[in-house]
Figure 1 (tube, rainbow, N blue to C red):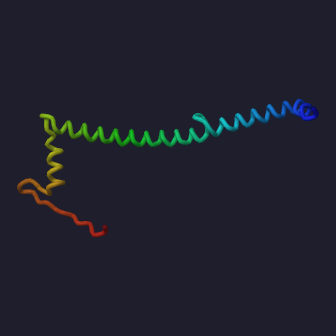
Figure 2 (figure 1 turned 90 degrees about the vertical axis):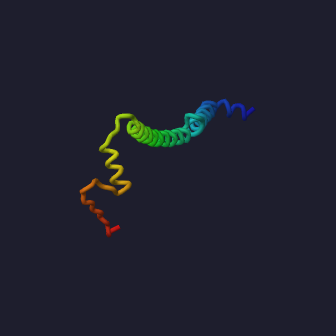
Figure 3 (figure 1 turned 120 degrees about the vertical axis):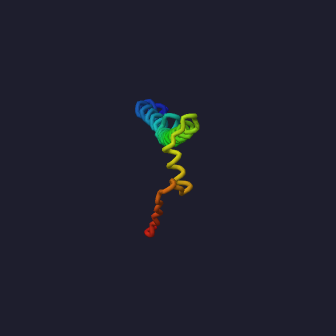
Length: 102
């Protein structure tokens, strides 16, 4: 009987303690807890970097698509020929600069 009396006397403390444990468990665990927040934040950062990469790929593909149209950009083609094939026009003097500091 004395145990029941002690439990009744400390009932408020026991309830507060159990409530505290419940709040603490939900704060750190579960889908809305601290650890889940950190994981979701990391996942969001990964998605944002993937989005930036995809946007760059789309811009690159759109640029290539515009170059395939019937309306050709002769300045861009001339730049590609000069850079990739190292060719120039007739009567031009071409200089190649070699960097020795690399």
